Length: 123
Image (cartoon, rainbow, N blue to C red; front, top):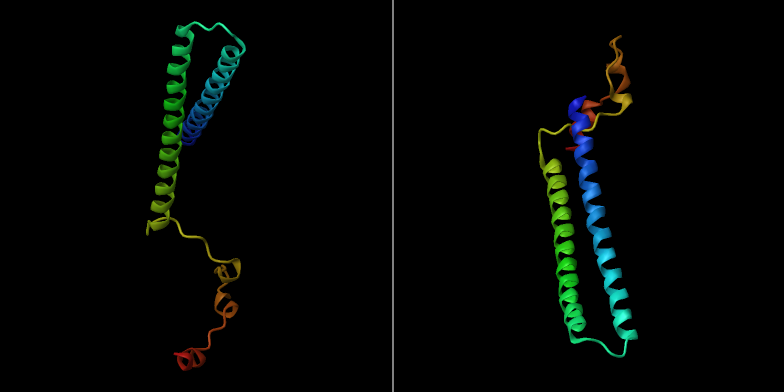
């Protein structure tokens, strides 16, 4: 039970981290747009504010590239884990249909009719 709880907590942390990265990028981009609008509305702009804007633009670009890299990395890890689960020979196989399940009263031989002659002729 604690293993499942730890697993759920780990998934919750990963999802929260992913959404925090996205929201931080959105906030960064929104503040940069507001800053650019404020600079565009002013006629007498100190060169220092223009330089801050250029540095901020580079920071927003780096932040965007970092977000894209981490999202692609998370996607690649999830895809590799899914492929590994599919390739695992010892993984749990899907159960057979109920019609093929054996019953306690040994009537399972009647449930599935097997015609050996027809099988041999098809081969």
